Image (cartoon, rainbow, N blue to C red; front, side, top):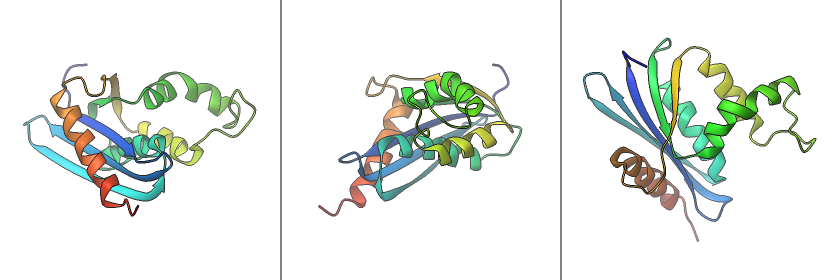
Length: 149
């Protein structure tokens, strides 16, 4: 995909899944300026934080943007590239005949992605990708801030 407006790295973290969690985003624009966003929740899951990171990233850039999004979450990549089609057809009921976990976030993400041209990329976590390491550390720090144990 040529003519990218942004490269975006996202990550989520959770202590004692479920437990305190954090999410982080690194947005790199075409002029190489970098913006970091992060937050957390006191009681959540890792998958919710991974999805929240992507949602927050998309809410932070202009609609109609073209971007490459990088995540180390197979849950996000598989969900968006494979599972979501059937989830929508089945009215958000999974193959286990139960409501899809994190349905609220998947619906929000599905709505948001309609306004963007996104190249989805999986990056192996803790493999030395500098930008992935940045968001990993930020997300973990947000989770640690909320850890009251």
